[in-house]
Image 1 (spheres, rainbow, N blue to C red):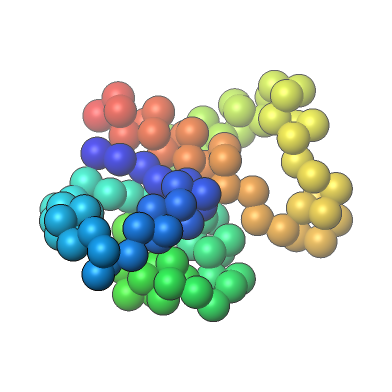
Image 2: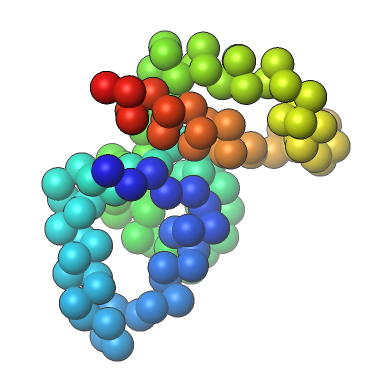
Length: 114
């Protein structure tokens, strides 16, 4: 299982389907088998723009999961560390921006332990 963050999804879309059909066939298979996942916070970051990754994400919205109870508890533990508290940009705190990193970490940690 692979849990993608925003930058990873954006990066893979530099490899256009017409030029790299075998990559996209394999990637599509992983998605259909629920081996490519992400979190709702990543989806919120992605849909802010109108590009290939946005369109793809809307078609594959099922991979962007809400955190379960264990993941939420782990996110709360993450924010006990000063490093993560300080990594929240003022913009995100004051304007309600998205901050997917702790949700990605929690998802990977909890899903890895299952």
